Length: 303
Image (tube, rainbow, N blue to C red; front, side):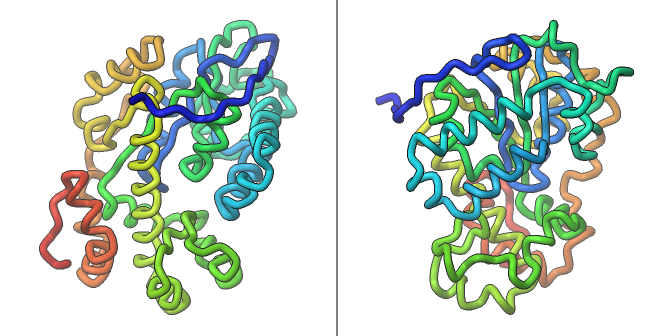
């Protein structure tokens, strides 16, 4: 049976264009979402954003306190729609608020905007940690399409360990495990993990976040109609670029050229072998070994 969920009728018009089948790129931190966003953005038919402030505030509000969405019901969907109605506006002031990661996607024009409103047909967003808000997004945009990026959790953890934005969530006072438990955002699901969290190593905390994201991804796959979810692997995107971009093109209905990802290298595949210590590898595989095996990533044997 095809999964169904409640929907909220809506008509959202941005820059004079009705928002139909918006695309949201999902994945754990450092899974390669930025590559997919960059590829899609090369098509002038799409307006792609990443990390606009109003969307970030909304996404993290729901991610860190999932009960907010449950308590607000249809109101949560309206909040999400309003955030994107503002974020997808193409104006010099709006584009001026784009963070560096959004600007790095390219196509910033001389007028200080990243797109020509007259050519926009579709909208997309690749704000980090959207995976925690998929229920709200589907209530806000029942026809939404998701592209989900999966990557070897050890490589994802290695990337997170060098990213101050990711590590900032682990600073004292940021974790809200006393108020929210189980905690999907931090990947803490049982009392033992909750008690160990304060003294856990950073690699452990990163591994928990990756594992939690992967479990949410599996749930999304089980609950979302096939035509609304495309799952790709980072490793395939890098090594079989033309084929995977062809799959993305078929899914979104627009040709995405291989040249959109020029200069990409496979050097980051398996980088955990150089960047993680033996102890960190053991920690990651102990926490997320089941997920690694289920996804076809071979454990090192140190688990």
